[in-house]
Length: 184
Image (cartoon, rainbow, N blue to C red; front, side, top):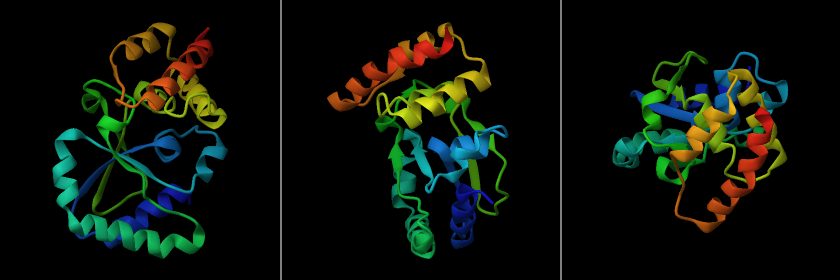
């Protein structure tokens, strides 16, 4: 069982109502792509994007946050966790990205409904740490798996919403030529 599956199954066990989560990062790749490199499956966490339309609802869902805390407490000795839950406004994504989310079918859960952003949006998220070697390797896998072209990436870059933080804008500028070089 992948670490991401384990985390999500424990979270699901602690829930008592339906919750939709949009995963990103290595958990989204490990669970959303059958041919993901094995190193990706070793991720120790699950990262979540909260669409703007659901921010207030999730913020007010005390049972979800209690389930998250119980999951982290239960898995602490294994070094597994779910803590990175970001509003969409803090993540590199195309405008209207929510219209292109893809269901994630595993693990089978009772309460959780899991999704991931479209592949081109996952590439954008991998640019948030600039030239980080691990993120660039993940971006390369996504680009090659999906057969993304330079035109696909340029189109995404033209409509990306960047958080209003200079550090993140600098990271995007640093990663952009590296990502474009992956599709020569």
